[in-house]
Length: 373
Image (cartoon, rainbow, N blue to C red; front, side, top):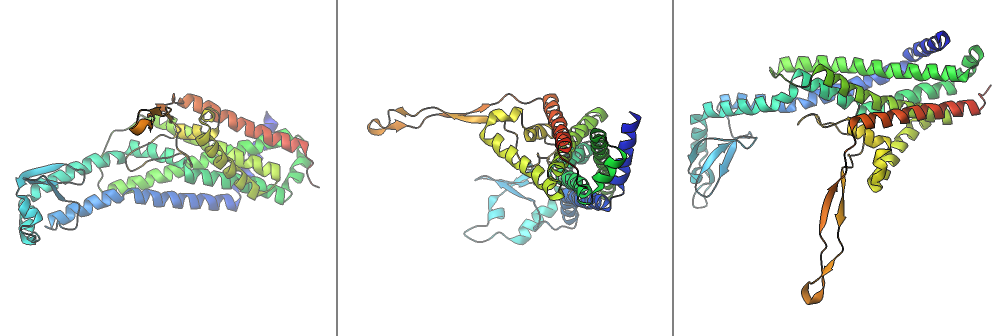
């Protein structure tokens, strides 16, 4: 055990000092930072709209009317109507003439308090997704999505492929001939590095969210419990650890960083295509397990699986029946049949099994082939 811990510590120290790993982490944080900033666009739009309404400017924003043949009412961006009914001629014009802009402006100004109150109510509903606990849970799950997957595959492929390119394995096996112990130490160090990068990125993102909430005066509460957030983060991290191990496995097989990256992404692509065409595979292939573990997380903070949607059912169509015009066929009826959903615990177990299998394949390949001298 002591030797295994020592091998893990040595591998972690080497990985941590790789400048490429640090550069990848900086790029990941930058991309997530842009995503964080972009997710507050709806809040910025709300603030601009409310500011313009206070100045008496209405024509350039999402405040309109909901009309029927006899009357119109003010309509907010969420479809909510407010205020008294107004003659449609004021809104739509009469005798082919456009509406009088001054009449519209006067109408808006006379109902400005109601418009402001309605906009605040809409903002309160939208801003619930930005409460500290809700948004932190969403960020944790989003890190397990596309950007996180690309980061960990690049990280693992770079670290493991570079050590073959620079003949590091020859030196390692000189000091520790047991290949299993060396590989276990390196994989454990990789898993630790991914987990630390995940936690560090999540902490930086949480700090950025705190700044944006203070900047835009977003005062919202509620959300999942601490345990639920930790569980969601763990599910996201499990998917990242799998893709990192998959990239490491391909780098070990082909002894190339490019193969580590391309092989893992190719497996994800083929996995998704196979599941879309053969639904029974959804219980066994990893991509669907990742999709199950990363559920939707809010109106403005939606999270998807790396590339593929959840296969939730199939369309079954009956055979055409006769009885149409001149005895011709009638169209058969079709219906959508829901599959029994995959439970998160089952998905986590299947994904964990894939992770272990990838590590075993890497070990078998390492043991079966000679290390170049």
